[in-house]
Amino acid sequence: MSLNHVRPWRDIYRRKSRQIMVGNVPVGGDAPIAVQTMTNTLTTDVAATVAQVQAAAEAGADIVRVSVPDEASSKALKEIVRESPVPIVADIHFHYRRGIEAAEAGAACLRINPGNIGDEARVKEVIKAARDHNCSIRIGVNAGSLEKHLLEKYGEPCPEAMVESGLEHIRILQDNDFHEFKISVKASDVFLSAAAYQGIAEATDAPIHLGITEAGGLVSGTIKSAIGLGNLLWMGIGDTIRVSLSADPVEEVKVGFEILKSLGLRHRGVNIISCPSCARQGFDVIKTVETLERRLEHIKTPMSLSIIGCVVNGPGEALMTDVGFTGGGAGSGMVYLAGKASHKMSNEQMIDHIVEQVEKKAAELEAAAEAAE
Image 1 (cartoon, rainbow, N blue to C red):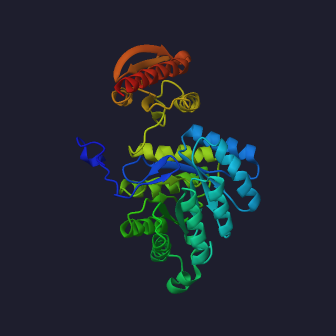
Image 2 (image 1 turned 45 degrees about the horizontal axis):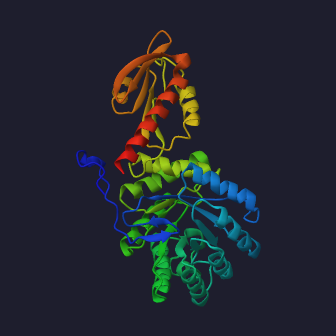
Image 3 (image 1 turned 45 degrees about the vertical axis):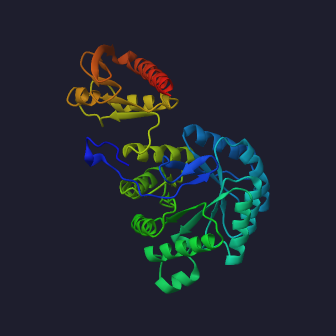
């Protein structure tokens, strides 16, 4: 996929993969890279889980995964699926029966781990349930739970072991004439994950689910994920992503979108370009950006906003954004619309005014998009 042929240094060519469906969301092929997250509530607490799914969907999640550790969770899943605005992936470990129950409950996809789901006969039963209920499967290889024979062969988790695990499980699905699957090869180590993903990308045309597992807290996990996933996406690898953070699932969705937005692979909401601020700033840049991020969360139309503290880079950045504000002197700054200087505005009124201008521009863009359909 060429993002901008005029600027070839911005081109990303996505790996060619088969397309599957996760509910009504296409994954792979030329479909947009889907953003996922996972609930961290007790699945048996249906109200709390549904609320978390809805919040994630509102933040932009295309797909949400829910853990199904026991029979009570399988029963709750049916109600969660019914209330969910997005497809639900059932996370299955250890108990193959949970996979069968989840398919029967209406899950759009089953995430099964070849390292702990059981022998081939049990996997075949899960495959049959998935086929019978129009459910796709994600093969979820994890460095922390590789099969015993692979650990004995390689001595430790390594890219080769992870790829071999994934290919063994792919063979089982294909031998059973099941092809609606995607695959992930996750590790908490960025280097191990990246190498494993490159290996699996060369070995199969299956859609790839990207993730750095157990990445950490909001700050450290975001950085690890941005490095690992960002580099793979830049190489064209990845059809759906999940940023694993010890944080609110909504934060995972936000970070996932920011990674995709930074590479021009997805566009949603307001992309704020802002300076780190210094002694030249004509207003409190940091506080202003924090406030604007919060007040503009409701905007889903892709657009850009520059908030720059002074005239060193402000006018130049504003040339390339839909709305801009550059700090000046005497308690006011310049508002830019469509890259051109428009009018001055006092710092005291600036935030309300910028929100108004962004909302107005978003409405214009939405109207133009509807007219073009």
